[in-house]
Image (cartoon, rainbow, N blue to C red; front, side):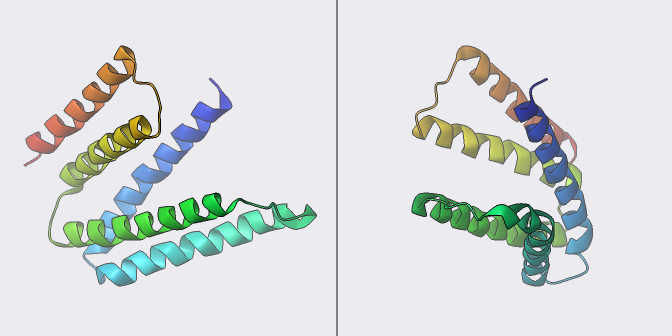
Length: 142
């Protein structure tokens, strides 16, 4: 297994755990406060863990990279806030999780195509199977 796939698996684990924790917190606080706490925790942990690594010199990111990271941050805030609201209103994690994951796959696939990535038949079938499975799981959980 390549290191890059291992990173993707760890990222998926983080996303799954995030879904569980945010669902659990959703009924106990206002969605905006929950989103802000999530964002601040990610910032603080990132600063404590990764800034010491940069002691040898701070990399010079491009302006476009900074803008993309800012847009990613706004996307996470959007996700945190509205997913907290959905779970707070009673959406079960077994329904919300598959919709979040399936919806994310659709967005990423469309954006990948927009950004010029090639779509092979095997990729298309794999994505269709993932989205179909998430849809079936979501509909069976009602």
